[in-house]
Length: 107
Picture 1: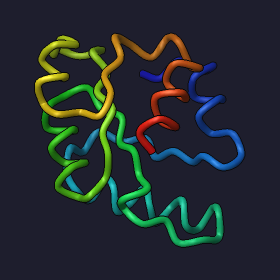
Picture 2 (picture 1 turned 45 degrees about the vertical axis):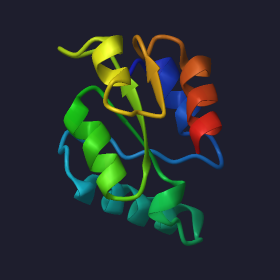
Picture 3 (picture 1 turned 180 degrees about the vertical axis):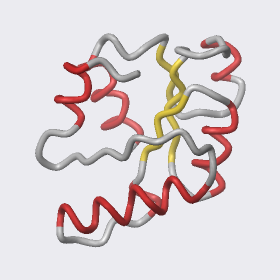
Picture 4 (picture 1 turned 60 degrees about the horizontal axis):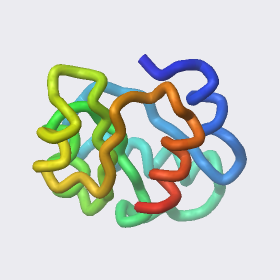
């Protein structure tokens, strides 16, 4: 669950989000398609950042050509997510500004 303050910040102008729980490369394609419709410009997979809480999320992002931010809100620890090769890992989603900074840093 994404805290409401975090959800508001990461859906501000210039950023768009797709919420889902399917750890597949399709998630990146869906998110990029929605961003294209919302922003009116092409959004290549390489510009996408997938935020997920499992190694499968990170693998799906990388397989689709996107970057990944791991968030240790599920059964996997920060260390386990770091070992997946995620471009950034956060302990949780409570600090919205930290999440935005991570997205901007890896995106």
